Image (cartoon, rainbow, N blue to C red; front, side, top):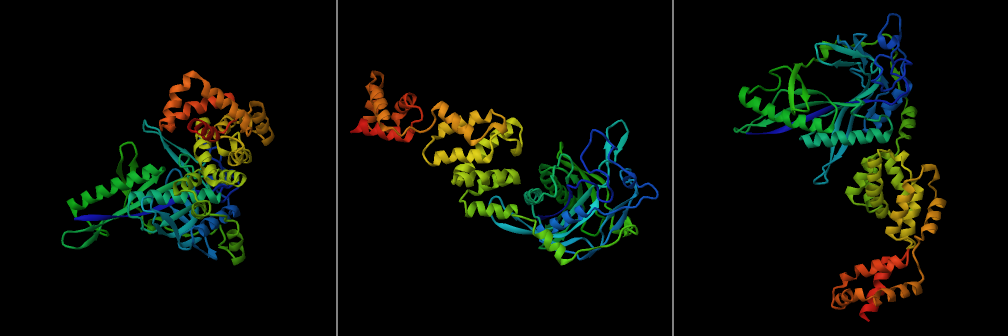
Length: 493
């Protein structure tokens, strides 16, 4: 007996708007001052009326288009009713039977095989977030309503994912797409990207039958590792439970479980509510929304290049490795834009990728900077690499120059400043072969180098390294490749 894991994800993406979904209250992450970003609408005070945030609606349409969804020309708002401390109105404004976006897909890539697979999207609808319950121990709980009313898009996938690794890959690709669209920062630590995981199994019994186990929803995952581990654990737990009880899909209600990341286990919370439990009905305070074809196409025109298309272009047009393309794109849209400027300036994509993924990324991490805060503008780094490409600067000299520029304030790092440092330190490649000839003769005449010269004459050309270093000490800016060629010619002639 074996089984196939069946996984579907419900992903909640908070939208980056200045104000909340149905009020003019500021929309900002602010955990240090709880309950300061509220207003009468957020608190559900008597006599208040909601007004839809048009920007949030536009961003939700943008999400739907990027996920290849059909955009509803007519949609409405519904009240999802339940009682919980973080929901001051005792209902959440959501979309029930007429979601804004439906029937789409997101393509993911298998990291091992490189195969592409489309994961279906059932729906993506716009709704307001709830507040946050804080359970601090000692039997007390607190409620912070700063988050209440924040606009979010809930993206519900088809149960097309077949492993924990696929679920993680889907979530990573979705997060990347949302950040490239500019609709959300998707900061999982701050809760702007959260995920509920629906898991069950198709058990293949020894007598040739396929049996589906009851579906379990694991709530509020806020890390890629958490999603992956929860899926792995839940699949194993359900298989053991099926072997013990034989319970099938439909025989017991859908259950909701939490996940303890430290212990790597899920735990029972409650039976999952069905739609009828929420008593949905149209919100009488909000008018339905219509979207014309012209409006939808105006949003489509703002989408830009998606991460998957950019990744393919880097590999095909720029001839980068798939690994380098993924690293660059995975750092975010601003980092990719930085790389592209460096590449366009120097004309060498592979060299630009190496410097960006190694030197630049290392220094960003070490200094805890974003790419927008990085001291060396992309144009200046591109100019430095162009000097290497043109043979006017060695890689070693370029790294010395890069290190000097890194210590300067960003506003002082210009091409003129780079040229000034090159001149002051004599970093430019020396093209005077006469000076090189003289330096090489001096080095070869040194008694201490007799054994090295003998080794080179005996066929050990790699032994010439120390001699190259001595020549370059005498002639700053000398190209090591040229020095090596001249040394070998003199020794072996």
